[in-house]
Length: 131
Ligand SMILES: [Zn+2]
Figure 1 (cartoon, rainbow, N blue to C red):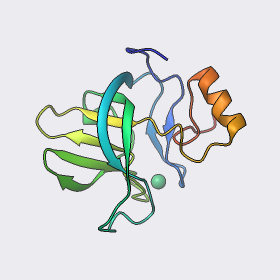
Figure 2: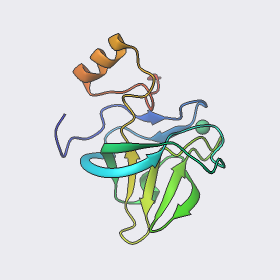
Figure 3: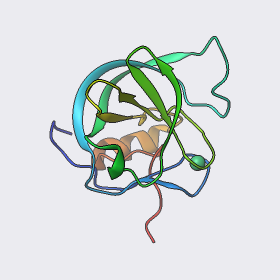
């Protein structure tokens, strides 16, 4: 995995069939961002966060297939699935207008899947099966 790499697989929602982003749109960048863990209810106040170190940069909101905003925190808006509102799956920077989808590869993968994802740079969380 290297900086500047494009996403090889399209990203889909964790729980519904919506496509979030088509393949080749996001660019892999390093980051340091504390993002709340994705769950079905984004209303919980004491959210657990995870430290995201890799994410996919999407320079324009219009490049998404299907994404919505949840709450605004400082200079950022959290991104959620537009259909089922699961999230946050990433964040949008209000100043720069750039959006980022977190690399959640470590989320609920078995060791074997983790190994696979290390090999092919894909990850279960956002991956959808090809048509
Ligand atoms: Zn969804």
